Image (tube, rainbow over all chains, first blue to last red; front, side, top):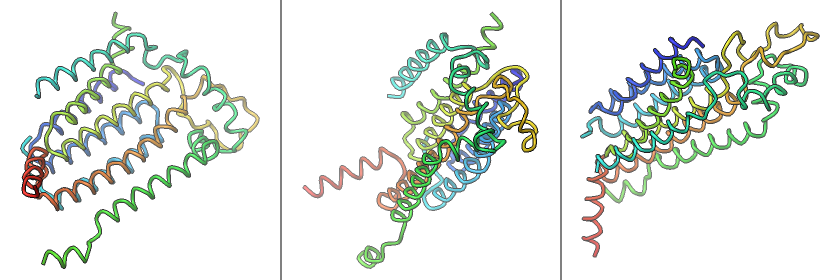
Length: 81
Length: 96
Length: 134
């Protein structure tokens, strides 16, 4: 609950979100989404919500990224926007 | 089209930021969410469920049926994925 | 003034994050990009709910200090964080993963049928198919 640390993590989360939706390559976008989830997990641990942080690190950061990468391997990497 | 969407998103975001002016300050211990229901859970959870972790106590003891319904949701999602992604042998024979 | 900004800037960041997700859902034409936007949107809303339960000052995470063997001690509600938003958002995170999985399965089915992920191209192919049927 140190507001300077909170501010730093929120800036990093915002940069990751903007990069994930603006990059052309879908695989890179998904990896950046994984980094976004990881910073979100750090933010929750900093807020004191340790159970939510554990769940995010175990489920969203790993399983979600694996599902996205599997879907992109089965389809295509290229994107026009 | 993108300009219209951008204006719409900025307008809705501005409305939400205007709504935060009436919220209690971030981390206020006296805010309504922190002062009405949760003290009862914090004080009684350990005596009633013998679980030191209050989040686990509420998730598995107080809201056990809710968690059971959640597993039904996960099972349904897994079933839908399996049915959508299976190789349909009849369709393949028709194509080839 | 500085106290007001420190008390509110977290909420402003959540709103900006939600706006980024909403823009990606509405303006991007690629289906996977739309799904990434939906993930960002969901995370922003979960973040808002978790931040409601935060208490500033010298408070513990919602785990009873000492654990087993300290039954007689009095537990003060002001010493612990609010656990209820954490519980509800734990459920929401797991449901969001289930939603993402089903959406990705549907995207794979769309790619198998139309051989593209771009929304405009899918609509074009579909219109040509409808005209050929008539």
